[in-house]
Amino acid sequence: MQNTLKALSDKTRRDILTLLKQGRKSAGEISDAFPVSGAAISRHLSVLKDADLICDTREGKYIYYELNVSVLEEIMLWIKQLKGDDTDD
Image (cartoon, rainbow, N blue to C red; front, side, top):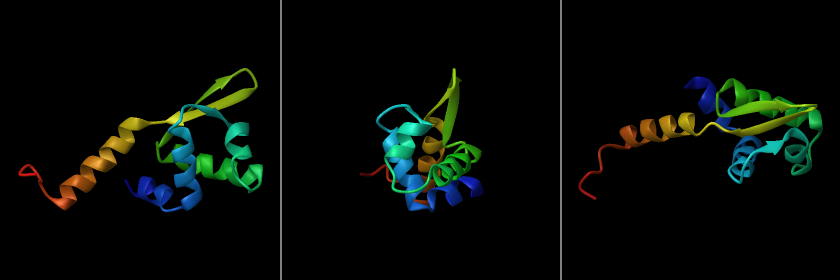
């Protein structure tokens, strides 16, 4: 959970997750969407992958990234539990 929260603390990484919400993207497509170096995007992708927020698939010379929805659901459940049970709503 600590790696996940650390990964989510960075705006660029949150923006990458938002981009991946539209569907899987190659590393190049992700990099093209941001005004930072490819190396910086690679580092962000590595942090997101280490936190299990994204997964990657190699196809030939390309690597495609997509959201790992199950981890996001776990976080949402944990946040909901912190907030308290809202079954009366």
